[in-house]
Length: 351
Ligand code: F6P
Image (cartoon, rainbow, N blue to C red; front, side, top):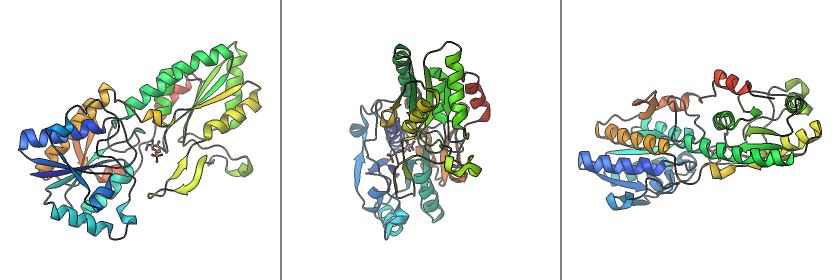
């Protein structure tokens, strides 16, 4: 059996664990061969590949990033992209292609599967917002990094009597913000799923300082929507804060900057000195936690088994403590939003 693998979209701690597991399972259990396409879908379109054998995957388990490279190439936006992918798979006599990606990469994978290509999916994102799986690898690492940052920001905020706004990743959902915020003892957490009023933000902080506290930590997800003062009647909708207006090949804007905006508003609204820290790509880089290494490894092993069983159109997923195959369509049905119950736990500690 000949299997190929690609990693697409933003990189994520644990990708190399998946690649290593696919290679070890395919070679060890099925006597098969594995190749890797470089830079996501771009590598399949251009047939830019590398062999993946024991030597190539040796020592990569603790490494961040992806040894294959990644990109946000959307084959449906490339002239002749679909035909080129079909040709590469045929020329290389591939029995199956394992696609490791988030909602965009898996969306393309599902479309290609529907067009008859032998594809298996592995869900990936630090944002943890893919439907159909309890967790994606990379999320645990991101939460650890953000929690450690919040711990560190606590001591400097306290020493200077400041409010510190911590901006974390989370394009559509606030999973990192809520989990790291609870773990780090945040005094307020703002996420895309829950609209908020700026007056409430300021009064929560004033209330806290009114009971003798002289510092606060506010965690905000980059995709949280700032209430738009100029659209009074439509406040619940809010506005995304963008770094730039252009979009990527999947139509996503580049987010970032809500932390700065909030810090300015909080300082003006409360009179407390306020600073901002944007964690950005530190949440995605570097070595994966043990949890993410194990989850990535388990996903890779089951994905290789699915190709061997010719169970195409499936995606691996975590349900409780079991890794099980589900239909890949689940990944693109909708986003997995933060549970209200979890946010209520976080709210207990606001102010
Ligand atoms: O999907 C994960 C994510 O980290 C988002 O939270 C973020 O908006 C996005 O990737 C940014 O990635 P890039 O700058 O690489 O496009």
